[in-house]
Length: 157
Image 1: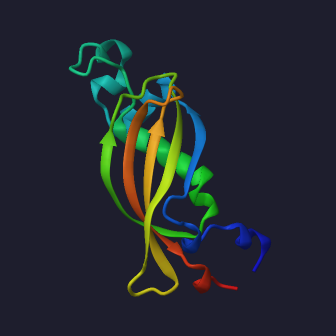
Image 2 (image 1 turned 180 degrees about the vertical axis):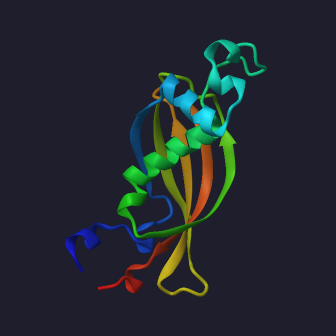
């Protein structure tokens, strides 16, 4: 096994209670508008002036945009150094607070549980709880994900 493979985190490394805090992603007005124009063209995401006239009353990133930022931080700081095979489920998705231009986001990810795959002896499921925070520790988003990881015992050598 190569050194790079030795450094990968496998299913066995994902012990319940293990956690990570990482990331620093600055959200901009331009990015919010660009995402909204393409995927979520609602007034509160497209125009800072018109957003004040909406029931929400604030110009902010779409929840799906915030989820995308969270996923990017997870990939860059955690998933990219694991033996991840595939995602299986996202649940309990909660948008806690609006994300506005100037917010700098970070992620806290923790392992809630892990279970062996019923049919695949080379893989197992890991339950990840992801939370996204502003720099003032205000939680803006959270969800739980069920992800399939390779097992060390089943890894190619």
